[in-house]
Image (tube, rainbow, N blue to C red):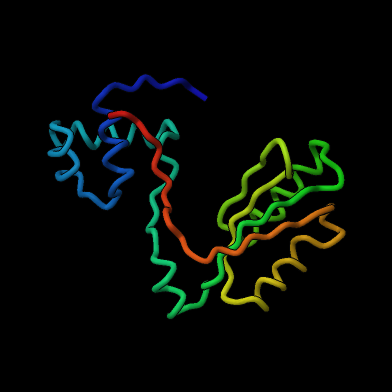
Length: 161
C-alpha cells in the first residue's frame, strides 16, 4: 500500500465526514475553508488511499426494531479450540459472511473473538448460535452478554483536527 501524506485540511475533512458523510461537496468545502474543486480532489485522494473505507447510514436500532425486528443486541465472546492461523482465519470468514454479525474483533488476552450481533428475538439468536458456533466451527466456549440499553454508539476516530 502506498503511503499518503495528509495535512491539517485533510484531517478536518476526515473529521467532518465522520460527523456527517452526507454533506454536499460545497458544504464540506465551506466547513474546511477550501474551494469545492480542491475539496473534491482531496476527498477522492483520501478515498483512493483507503483512508475512507466506505460511507454508510447509521440506523436507529430502537425505531427499526419496531419496523423490522433486530431488537436483540448481544456481545459474544468466543474461544476457539485451536488458535492456529488457519483456524482463526476460518472463523473470521465464517462470521463475516453472516448478516447478523455486525462487528468482529480478534482480541487478546482472554477470548479469541468478541462479536456484536443483532437478531430480531431469542429464537433467531438461538438459530445464529447453532449456525455459527457448532462443533464444526472449532468453538470451545461461548459467553453472551445481552444489551439492555445502548448508552453510546459510534465509529468516530479522534483526529484532533
